[in-house]
Amino acid sequence: MIRPASTADVPRIAAIWNRVIRESSAIFASEERSEDEIARLVQEDFWVWDEDGEVLGFDRFFPFRAGDGYRHTVEHTIILAPQAQGRGIGRRLVEHVAAAARAKGKHSLWAAVAGENTAGLAFHAACGFREYGRLPEVGRKFDRWHDVVLMGRFL
Image (cartoon, rainbow, N blue to C red):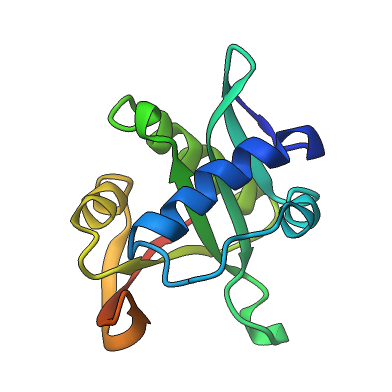
């Protein structure tokens, strides 16, 4: 089930998020997220998928860019544990986040997806996101350059 994240979820969220940071180029960060940082993030617009008391994934939205002109535009980050993938959990989280953003007066929801993350690109397309731009070689991780694909969905 989907529920708001709490500070009790922080260790599991950190485990899910940091595995992706360590093992993939889906996220260009090289430093893992600290539990203190995640504890701050879960205070607002952050939801988890809880299955029998175990967090299997999360989705959150946050300002797309600084500045008043962007106040109606948000970006999201969704990450699932491997055992949660392919079960419809991600789509349900995205729909929940889109509804929550819409309820807060947001106009569009965006994702910055690594160009080689074919699963992430297909997932977002299946959730109603459209590709609006590709930024070549803007990220660097594992000694390689990576493209970012900007995908958006109007709410």
